[in-house]
Image (cartoon, rainbow over all chains, first blue to last red; front, side, top):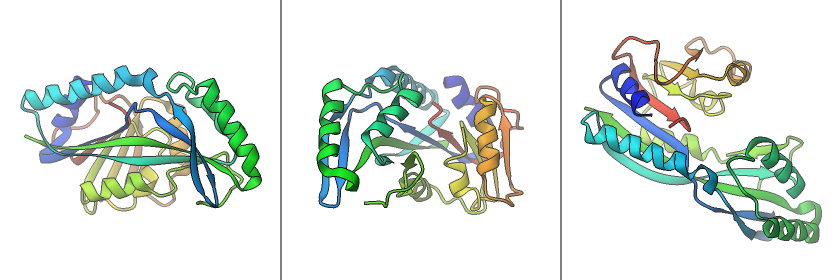
Length: 138
Length: 103
């Protein structure tokens, strides 16, 4: 990672800007939406990729410490995914994110029950916490 | 609440990622390198704004999806297979480098 950040430094113009944009491994609620609002079925465990978060933080801190960049800004925001049904959400999770996300059995059970109660008007949402960090080339 | 659709899922329909990127940096007229462009989800949202955009990703399947999903014509957008650790560009080429979920 540090090498990629150094490569980015090389191809940036003088005072160019680097943006680190990535999801954070923070547990997030599995929400069931209805016309009346949203309700959480429990937390989705995002911890399997926590080592990547730590490594990315260490890499950006290293290049700042070594004088390649100056950090200008750091913020987080929500990045939402929506599914029509809990089963579609679970299938997608198993297909694309099975190594990155853990859906506890009790949360799935609760989500299925909540969805069933609400019927076709319900939808499913997770809101991943994203990091945007901005750095200036020194 | 967003209306139901026939597609499997909706990803960031509020465009929060683009809004925060645009708030962080004025893209217009700039030369942008996106490292880890993947299937072009973010790239296609902002590719019409800068002077030039180059997306780079090691995964050829994802790059193919990116190529087919970019709105045509985007003659100033280029997608290249490669790694962030060995960028095939001269020094001091880009105003902005974005690591898109790739650190």
